[in-house]
Image (cartoon, rainbow, N blue to C red; front, top):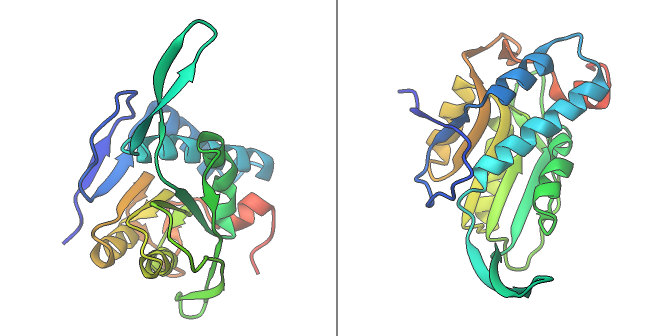
Length: 228
């Protein structure tokens, strides 16, 4: 059975922690930028900008339930008590396409840690192959945000989420620009506690396991390389 999708519109109102689920972020700007992102005529430099803009909108929505603690400060006028984000936040881009989402999310959360995970898809088997992992042996971050523009079969995402589970990260969220229904169902079945935030859910995968209609290979388009 397919996983139910919860559509949530961005809001400036702070919300309480959500239950597990899938969130397709609905916003006119997302639809606008997605159209240009999907267009095969969009050049790499613009494609990179669009990935960043969409990552920002996703991260804004996905971080609404971050814990806050009070922080006394002094403005030019008077003393007051403000708030700041509590705990450690880790960004986990899945190499290489996930790198296209890192900088704009770091602009929102400058204190975040970045831990890289390299996973590629074997084109013959469509299975994920991990080739690089850089995680410390020390205490895990409090919140992990896995970044990958495309959630196709879900194999790479599951590999990343498995690594964060082994690291014992208590709260993990997956941020993808475009996902397939199959990929979402696969990830949600394996990691029901993980919230998934996407800009769009496409209906299917083709014979080569690319998302349809999708946008092609996000890594190739971000880095202006030709498919091997």
